[in-house]
Image (cartoon, rainbow, N blue to C red; front, side, top):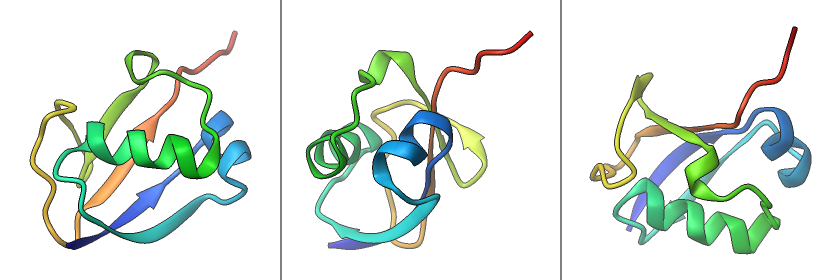
Length: 80
């Protein structure tokens, strides 16, 4: 089991009710982690609508997570 720091923005922040949290997880990839969080927080965005960053670098959904990683699920941005 690893512990990761999560950051939430925009719609994900609203749905989680927080801007971030620290979680212990068995998830080995951001994809598996997001699937778990979707159930916990009721996230409505599908994975293909998000970008993923681990330790400030954009990466693949299949990147291997490590203890202490900071994970950010980046929702689509609207603006003008």
